[in-house]
Length: 328
Image (cartoon, rainbow, N blue to C red):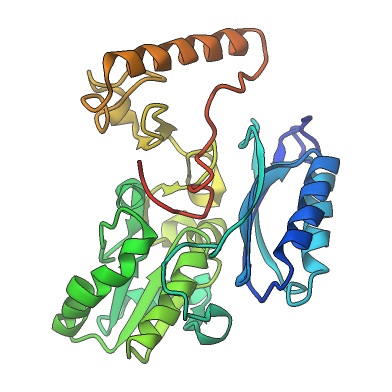
């Protein structure tokens, strides 16, 4: 796949989701797969009865062709897309998959298309979360919160989004009541998880529920760093690993042993071996696994020295590509 469309010949990245009813998932999957293959677009798209979710990358013309197919679907004309550029291919493979949910929460009776909370624009977000009457919840997973978070946000430290309902019904509701706050504001990477989480909280009897429109990515894209309440970087589900203000690529890399983000300090650890393990997983892999990872890394380095890409270098797990299923 050749990069095209940006001033420096990079890859256009499009993160998208929309809750809207899809009746014939197989037909939609077929159309999307054909458009992606024709336009040399890679990444992951998830198709469910409740809508679409995914991140794709490729030549600008190919990405726009795929988005045109999506916007032509009933209910998808107003699809919101968050764009970025990447110098290297963020995805090595293409996956278009049918799922029960486009983001797995395990609450089948929710209808985020009709029941989600109120959107808050990035321009109004700072004032909302700085108000003591607002209880701010990060709906992402524990490793994402370690990379970066909004100042003052509560971290559920869940291992997957499926754990969020149990966290709220137990610890989260108690924390909300203790805080004395009369409204809740939630956020996530691109907006999909907090949109579903607001519908869940409303079903649980919480009346004033808000969520960041466009998620952290839109906030980092549109908010000046000097005015920002964001601290750290934002983990993303592709080979960029993390982004900073302006959506510039961050300083985190990916451990190829456990697929978790590693900070510059983590890479300085004696437990870190590039392509093999990090502090999180160094003592959880057997010798045979470590040898396999080391050989894979050797092949990656050989391919890199020849100016190519080794397809054995694992891209983000399909369940991580904005589906946010579970950490290994």
